[in-house]
Length: 232
Picture 1 (tube, rainbow, N blue to C red):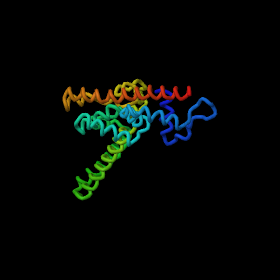
Picture 2 (cartoon, rainbow, N blue to C red):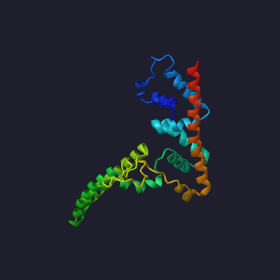
Picture 3 (tube, helix red, strand yellow):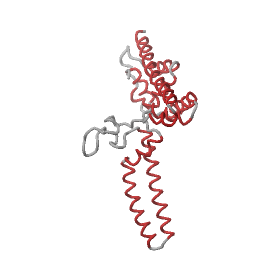
Picture 4 (cartoon, one colour):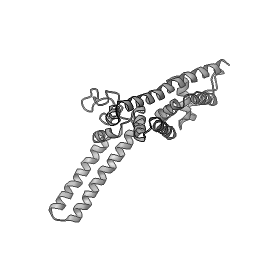
């Protein structure tokens, strides 16, 4: 990422005031100049701008904008959701069922649910049907809350649950085979082909690539503008 773009994104962050460009240097630019350059560059690269805001700042408005764009471009809401997940390196819906059991939080809560289930079994064996149903509901509630928590965490952070984002397998310390040592979830784009066919997969790839290309073009345009302002 270019330095000028990085500065502009920092200024958009909640702690942006801490990153205010220094005015001590006569050749330096202020907050308004950086943000102005970003806004101008964004006009011709709207999806690139939304991608940067979503990827670096988890901006909900940008995420929704991308989702709306993908759904309209690809003509299917489910495919649009899959394209957004691929772009932001988040798990696709079908991957979540495989990833959740590997999440440390789910593993911890699963053990707690197992204890409750043992109590439920004892109640069932003793003929206490009411207590059995109560404990069974408690156990199911624990697992559902744990799943919801893990899904929300992975969709927000994109961290690989197998290595907790470290890129290394716990205890063994070698490269995590699930994320290829990246520490991030690897979206299974092949799911698009299996669900919707090769042509739709190609359309998703084009839409995702366009957003990434726009982000690169935005960075170049912004750098050019910032350099021109510094000359002036």
